Image 1 (cartoon, rainbow, N blue to C red):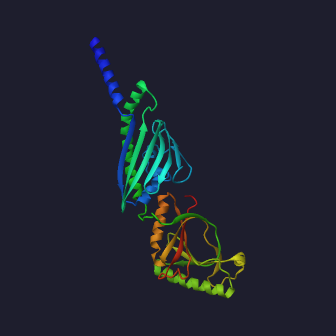
Image 2: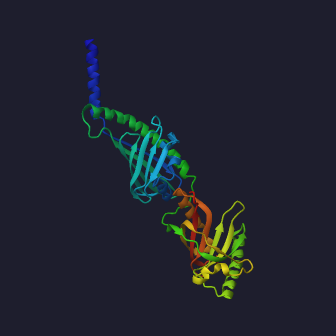
Image 3: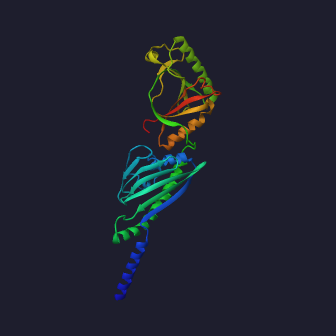
Length: 348
């Protein structure tokens, strides 16, 4: 019996000694290579719009209630969740620092285990990117004695399950991001706007699978509209625009001229001439980019806009416009300024 007590006390003292030597801070880092530009990788991580699609914790309890608050992206973006206590429990994350396309730092609390800090570091590799996910937490910080030693042992288990979650989460993140458009929108002057509809005279119903066919049809339509404007002495507010609507049967295009002042108020009174009718340009929330160059090179700008929208967890409506800001912008051979806007879906 005495021998047993001696062994038990020795083991206890050994555990205490080892516990004192264990680190009081848990640090976990895991990395993954993602075949997408740094701008896309960073943007997905810089908010919680797509969090459910890749987070290892969201995967644990799909029925958990999520609450997003603050801005959609950047400093102040906040998420809280409440789920099954035996699976996910409660938690929260909030972005406290955001350095575009490089670093995102977050305050976090996972499952009632106390505060922790997360950090994403994104390294641009040209075509692809490397993202490193870091976790830092103190175990039983501010406590002493046996409680602090027990906390240090708990840190060993915390390190293991956080590492497992990170590996699973980064694999899901890689799969999710690599399904997004490939275009790199870093440095592109993309902005989100709320656009009011404008009164226009238009020729619509133009369709064509080939870009050349569409361009030819639009050229004829703009000629008709210009002839109409001269005949009626109509005052125009701005340069011409092309309005496009995507559909299952292909795109539909309309050529439009924006009316000004009293002509705008009286647009419905104008007699329809041939294919020309009064209407309105699209309105609502849109993502826009001013394209500089020939009209035939706008595909790059469209690809950047689609990539930006997808990375921000938004959805476009299939409605867009090209507003030609300089003379002859609609001519594919002329280098000019074109305002391109993709309108967002109302239920995004």
